[in-house]
Each structure stands twice: as C-alpha cells, then as structure tokens.
Length: 236
Image (cartoon, rainbow, N blue to C red; front, side):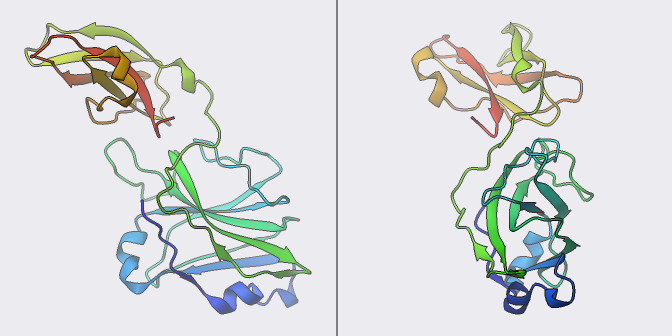
C-alpha cells in the first residue's frame, strides 16, 4: 500500500478539539486529499496511545501487544475525507495512527470492525505536552512492508503434511495443517533447493478456519525437480 496520509487538519492538530475545556478528552482528526477519499474509505486505521514514545504494536487479533498501551478505535475515512476519533486520554501522552492490512486471502477488506490484522504501517505520531497536543507528524512509511509486531499464539504450528504429484496432470497438491486463521499462507517452489528462499510463490495466498489448506502448484514439466517451502504472509 502506498503512503496515504496527505495532510492534517491544522486546527485540530494544534488544539486537539478545544482540550482547554477538558484536558483528558482528546480528538484526533486526519484529513485526506479529496481525490483519495474513494479508495481510503476501503481501508482501516487504528488510533492508539502509549505512555512511551513507541507504541508496542498490534497483535493479529487486534489487541495491543503491551497491555499498558491503548487502542482507542479502528476507523475508516468518512465521506468528507476525514478520520475523527474522540476518546478519554486515560493518562497516555503519545498518540499514533496506523494503516492496517485487514484484507482476507481473497483481498476483501471487511465492512465491519476488523477481527484480523495482517500487518500495519505507522502513519502519524503526536505527543501531549503541557496538556496540549504537539503538531501531529506524518511518519513516512511509504515503501515499508507491513508486518506483524507480535506473532499470534500457534502461528508456528503450520507444516506441510502431504505432497501429491499424481492426482492432477498439471498440478502438485500440497496439504498444509496447523494454519492460523489470522495468517495468510503460500508455498514457494523451485527446481533448485538452494534458491527456495527467493523462489516464486506457486499459488494465491490462503487461510483457513479449520487449520488445513491445500495448495495447487504448477508442475515442473521440464526438469521434473521441484522443492517446496511453506511461507506466511506477511512474509517474515
């Protein structure tokens, strides 16, 4: 995903929605270029807080890695091109906005609050100073690969349990067990085992609530040699 935050609402960034009247209530408002609103409304963002200068991150199931941190809400851009979030500051001095990868294996982003976080990019950070908010600053995360900040429980259990080269004439069937529903998986394949870590992905990414998934990988009809490696997405 490309860098998406274009500019900030100056008034909101400077005074945090008139915090002088209630210093513990904070409002964060981000504004986007009008031409971007159509695509931005399909993406989810997380507004987060921390007592430290670094937010600990978000787990695959949408919780703060550090229980002392806060996730104030998961939000989309409205039809005016803004994200607006009002919340109780709750002792936090540092605020962050993250762009989230919430798409399923088919690339579909949920309409309702996401329950799976595939990855995240930090977009905005800000600090409370003397009961007022310092100017929100855009973090240049363009070109940064989204990735987990914390591995969900059971994420390392997935494994290839069967390779079937005979059931289909042009495909090798790869059966994987132990998949985690919050993770996407794929298979690399190569005719040279030394190149397997850089090899092409053999199928579209898949996930499964049941823990078992089968990949269909094109057969190597030239040399006949074929090695396979299971990988997670975001790739680590």
